[in-house]
Image 1 (cartoon, rainbow, N blue to C red):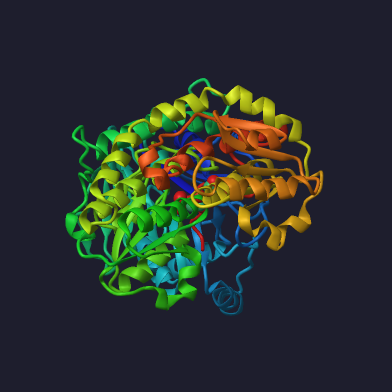
Image 2: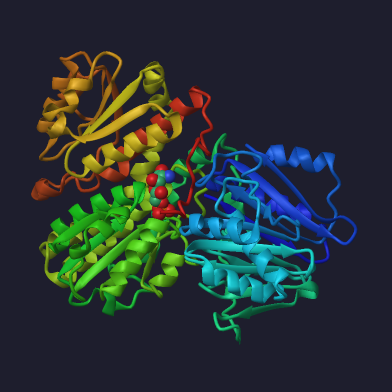
Length: 623
Ligand code: AGP
């Protein structure tokens, strides 16, 4: 979603701004812009709709000098994507220039006030422009820039990360935020940076300060910075060390980040197993205070999109292994179900790759207010979610996920949930000890089975491409493969834009079957386990009504392979005749891979923007 960057130091600001905006491209955006101050030219603003390359073209035509500047990538919320609506925005005198992430809820009332009382003319359709005018009104009344910003945020209701430049106080950048992330980077040569996503800073520094709600930061010359709390008192903030690996922002020889990230999954699972499963098969959470899990009698899982589907799998394994009643809710729907939150014996598990998803953060804050305990499963230790969880975190260790479509973070989230389910099963006396031992032993082979599955990528490609022109797809699965069907449908629609839906296979004949014909293939996950035959019959029912039938089956499959049109074989999964009821336990980690790869190969074949699909953002920071 929208991204903010800023630079003040000894060097040419433009280079830093463009480099940082390039890093933020992965978050998804529809326009971009920069503002740079120089004593000669004042504040120069350039902005352009579309890809960052359009902005770069503009900067090549016009000389932009200056050592202080701010930049933005915009994902439209209020006002269509256009040159005019792109940030930065300025006040009428072009003295105050701002970039903003977030939404002003009382925008209409403030706009009316500015028009009626101060005769201000708005140039864009955005709510963000309000910030520039309000700060301008207060500086006109004689306030200094910091005081004007303080007065402005008193009037704003909504969410914001904001960076401000001013012609009157030119050699500084002012920053503030409320429920939107903003990070300051302390460079080595008296350079100061800011960004809404720390990944934009990692090429310059690993020393960062996370700005907290209502604080104001002033970044000045010669590396001087100061941070004020909401009362205007100077504070001594915590300086954190960033642990992101810049190499992960490289495609490493793959055509797209998505393909690279799909192939990274075995290594990530191996790393997670190394952290959480000791050689003597003890589950460990090195950074988790055991108090968080003690005495819980109910679990509520929250997430959005792919993280929610990981939560669906989590619900099944937590209930079947730990035998703790577990509810699951879309973070965005929790507000509509306030009674869903129980007492302090309820553990809320918030799952979020970015740790910055606005819906998830809001749901978590609501839960915390009611006394719930929080455990975060996130990929970003420095994120707002990790901060809210104050250390009660399981990190997915997946490294930066650049492609908008989540893949490696999904399988990593599931594995973390399995660790949790096993550990709670042990303390809660869920499954018998012997069965838990078997699970722990077998899960160590997952990375290897994933590698074998990934080595079949070219075969999956051959199998899926004949269906590239189909108008829609239906994904079917039961039990642990139902969330995988939903995830397969989400991946396909996100990156190919082909209509696709996932259903619990048993639901097919209660409605969705009416939509199928020869233009709508069904993609069924028919892997061994108690639900095998039921799923197979659902696939056949669709086939007999004209739908081309694709299926994921295991190598030694005997029945489904005779019925379907296209077979996506996966390696045989761990099995013990003694524990037949656990036969499908590991399936999701493997069955998702042909679906991820199929979505990728179709999108690539159709010439879509695989890593940055239209209209989508990597981290959805508005509700
Ligand atoms: C997944 O492919 C999507 N891009 C999206 O559904 C994503 O999983 C969702 O927005 C949640 O993001 P988070 O994990 O960063 O909270």
